[in-house]
Image (cartoon, one colour):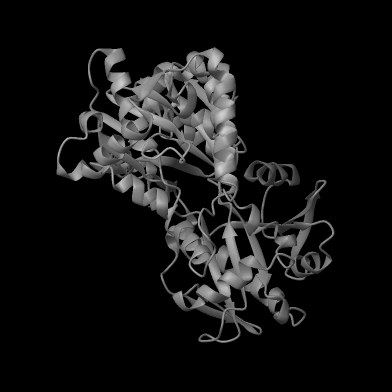
Length: 488
């Protein structure tokens, strides 16, 4: 039986032998990455039969890393059983192209659906090229470094020690002052970078800083995995011209001198969709991109056709179309209407770019390609405008799923939500072959009425939600309540 231990530094230290042997060029299973991004991810670690796996949440649903260690095949069997018994989906995160091939070739892991988001792809560089910046293609980087030397003298780059802690915190505070408009994701990154520096030694990481007249002006944190340097943190005060290429190349040379030999590769983490950061990282000429696939095994979404249209009562449900981009933007950014949907786009850390008509459309297309959900547009006619959405999601290995429905305010009060919810429930049962449950906020009386009017009966409740089951669902109240609890 698999036992997952809640994330802690001590649990991470126990996993280090497996992390250091990971053949993937992706950063997501490195010690630094796991520490940086465990916050809010419900991250848990497991070692079974000399094999390591991570469980965490993405998109409010559990996911697992592909196993690394002595017995990945045996771990796959254990994960399959664990997911079924605990009413969870079997999903894998950060599967690079080689891992995706393994999954696709494994008959136990079919059908599989997958997708990757370019925003989260890691950049792979040549270690030797980063040390020297030789060649015409690096003219820009060399010019920036020469400008730095001319203005501030020969760069002083050294490994940082524990007694440099105050310098690091001061530098990060100045960095944040330079980036007051930074998004929530960047603010969390800075907070975690400071904490990561404090425990670098315990995780075998390297921290280095660039000093200008004894003032820390830039610092990086990196980790060696196999023949690769993973750079987790790269922060610099941009008032010093040319500081980023100077710090980057200097850090790489410092690592090479420390080891006594160069490595083969450098992985610099994703650009999170920031256009300026993407341009900058591309200017350093990556030799490859490490795409990170999210893979869902046995998703009921695999039964979906690309185009659907079915009606009941006063509504028609169809696929979400490209022409729905603006309507879908309106649906997702109406803060008051989404209050009882449990969503506020201003707090969504997956949104890393300015919100526009592509933001939510692209996101839902990704979710459907990855098998995370089935999203359908609510219309008054097959060629009519999108007036709402139904979503079938929270799929579990033992065949249950959650159903939700929302309608634009101007169309509420006409029974459209009731008709859409009932039609989607019937579609989920007949076409997707899943047992449907639903929930609503305790104070959301209209949703309570909509759900019960479609033959759902109250199941249980907690401090926040009332839960419902469709009468056709078999199994005890206790079992289904456990499924609901684990799905969240």
